[in-house]
Image 1: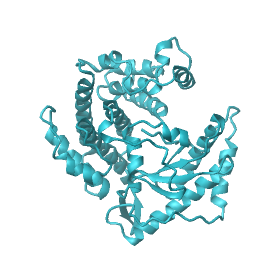
Image 2: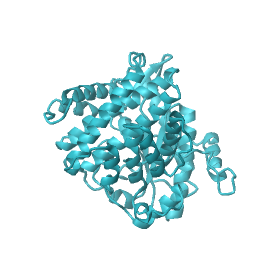
Image 3: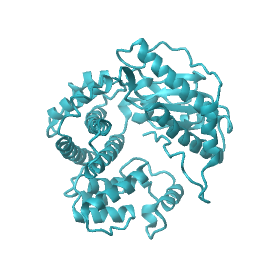
Image 4: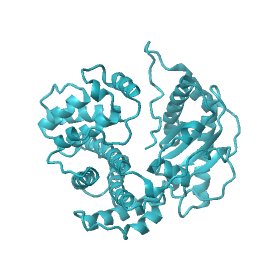
Length: 421
């Protein structure tokens, strides 16, 4: 997964002062009078696109591109800005609210810059993180900004995220050949661990949904829509994994729906129901209609979704590793590396100390932080018993100092989400 930068503009420095260079860049963005033009491209942003929808999206993207250019300019000139995700491949979701089009999908953008030092790259990422938060407030839709240079692009792995970038993007500003350094992606070669990563990330959304339910935050229509989206993403992940398994994955939602009926689910419990839910979720992505869904029993739907996600996750990992797991605790302790490459042990150790603090776990600290999260995830989401919550607290390095199980779950989920992002 491409991890977008999402830290808030209100992050503080070591001295407790506001991160002034980044906030100044946001102010500059909002006050700038510079006129920019998007690259000419008549291909649609979504299915059933109208002139009004297109104008709305183009206006949003003009604001986003202006913000990116103003934010990056103090550090280096931007090479290109690519719109990726659903809108980048012409399948973005849009609804009509109060008579006006409103994007449902995030605006996902990839900013390509020249090669710069690690220090400069870090500063650009922080500035883009602040900009992302500001744009979300201004436009009313999440704006995910990732930054890469040509060397980064040349080294990207053959996984879902980068395959979708390569086959579904619009260079909306700058050099139209900026993504050429990427190696050719082959959807038939997507590794099974990328399916595990997909299931893991969707489980993170389900944990946020559980926190909302625990805190009774499902009264407003916006909260209910958010919950529906997380439940639908789980259904999408299950079907996507099945396409990966048979080498049939593709970027297009429409094409995935066509290929779903050809999948062999004879060895999968509830396989036919999973395919049915998958196709419904795909249809919802390209032509969203939340009105009938937010009126459902969301608590019941959530529990059904978590049970299905848990059963599929267990089946997927047993297929992946060629062995069974009697309990989630056994799964957490049995396989040390579940999410692909180990990476640099030194960098992993430094990141773990920075996020978790020092601890007498030298071997585990040499693994990526997300390996710790995937160990805690099923204990928190699939089977949150008192014993499992206590174990998750130790994994996440947070004291379990309350006997109130609801409060403890909320505290653990807060900790998990802060580490996950």
